[in-house]
Amino acid sequence: MKKITIDPITRLEGHGKITIFLKDDGSVANVYFQVPELRGFEKFSEGRPAEDMPQITQRICGVCPEAHHMASTKALDALFHVEPTSTARKLRELLYSAFFVTDHTTHFYILAAPDFIMGPDAPPAERNILGVIAKVGLELGGAVIKTRHDNHWVIQTIGGRPIHPCFGLPGGVSKAINEEERAKIEEIAKSSVEFGKLSLKVFDDVVLKNKEYLDMVLSDTFTHRTYSMGLVDENNKVNFYDGKVRVVDPDGKEFVKYAPRDYVEHLAEHVEPWTYLKFPYLKKVGWKGFVDGKDSGVYRATPLSRLNAADGMTTPLAQEEYEKMYSTLGGKPAHYTLATHWARLVELLYAAERMVELVQDPEITSTDIRNIPTATPDEGVGIVEAPRGTLTHHYITDERGIIKKCNLIVGTTNNYAAFYMSVKKAAEDLIKPGKEITEGLLNRIEMAWRPYDLCLACATHSLPGQMPLEVTIYDAQGNELKKLSQGI
Amino acid sequence: MKTLVLGTGNPIVSDDGVGIRVAHEVGKKLNDPQITISETSAAGLSLLDSIVGCDRVIIIDAIQTKEGHAGQIYRMKPEDFSFAKHLSSPHQINLVTALELGKMLDLAMPQKITIFAVEAEDITTFSEKCTPTVEQAIPEVVQMVLQELDG
Image (cartoon, rainbow over all chains, first blue to last red; front, side, top):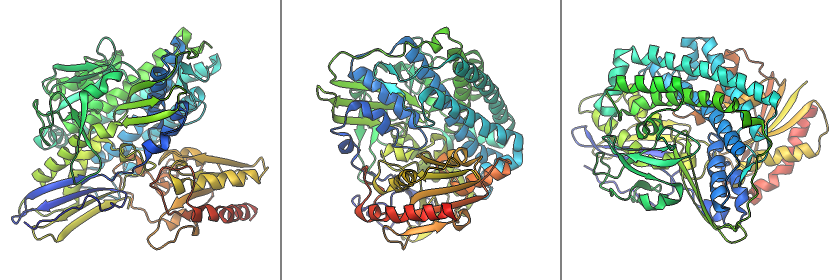
């Protein structure tokens, strides 16, 4: 095999790169998934007031700003040693639940649905939301747009601005809601529950009742038995906004449950010379390479991982779907990467039901929305579940609250080892000697990373939500055989 | 005629904030109730939310092309972009796809969309300022937008 040296100092063109090297016989020799690093975020934050961080960090990405805003706000609570008021907590979680509804809706209908509704062999130009709507009908398409639009209105109403709220403060939030707003939010929450139920029905009709797709979901090619991570409440039930981080082993047994401030004791980072992004792993298990299993510190933090790490959902309809999902998948925990799309829909339903609960709480229109901090700031960690994984914000300041150091671990970063392994395995299983490398085959390799909904923008603390990606296949002599790229 | 002037981009990544800077400057020179000046750092499908219901939209954004030089200004229409509609991320519902989706769903789409794009030098360094060459282009883009609004 021709030896190709990848110089890690060579500047990648700002996009992710998957490179597949083949052996002489046409089977896969090795696969690399390289992510560019954009330096400077920590430097950029130094010297700024910590209270600016919810505004600054939400600009890292155009897709999940609310997640950064919320993690940052919670880091400020910890930094200033202040608890939010009960109403502020509920308003935060209400906004956050609306955000989850919009984000999960967007992901499912733009990414997952095309794979299954159009099929992995459909040409790229048809495998998108336009193709989906053409096939399932304008009514569903309209419902997707309306659900997003209405929940963006909820975020704007509670948070002060759509998508990039100006809302979180240490000890509380910046505005309350009145009864008129509350009533409209309740209407939207109830419609969102119906939409969640409809989306699960779509998944059932299109994927679960289709033997070919169900086989793909359950296949070994798209399976890795890793540790699972997610935030849980005091009853070990899924909560996106608050709680402790729980990690279960590949058999489902609790491995650790830690409070946000203790994250450094449990997570370490492994470095590879061929990529800038580091690979987090469980410190107490250790780094054993890009392998799964109980002895490997590789873990996942995805919608499926959250459901694996918890003992259930707190809302009734989502709990029913949670049980149905695990029953179909043959038990808990489930390690089928493609089932992440299913877990995402269970979470969508939970988020909508949670919105109904919170908006009907008598405290939700109270104006007691802030506890003013009095302690001297020093250090704080805030953790929430971003739609694509556990999100950690860690700030160290001087006694005036000016940032000296900040560290972010974002959803996608948690999953770097896992999605690399998923892509590698799919490539190794699907590219065989003598088998033609078709568009459809490369699509199936893409299906291995799509469930993770990669936000390399966040992972590299960088680009405004672009994820250009290039896949190149080289033969044993180093000649380029095939190239697939998007967004470049 | 309901008009939207929309500056898009990321205001903390150097030249990627140029669209938002131009929109701010345009806003300082206008006082017309029919014209809304707005900014967005949102990606993809959210662009649709911004433009539905407007008769005319002017979008200002940063761009990087193969042969362009920093500070160069382009005036374009949506048809000038030959994007693949292939998606691997929600981030990739680009403007063209968002517009098609809007038409497909019979939403109130604008009759006229003009895009002013400024060739960016640096969209990878965290900074709230544009690079000098791009900074110098801002007044010219502002004039072009104002002329477009007059015409």
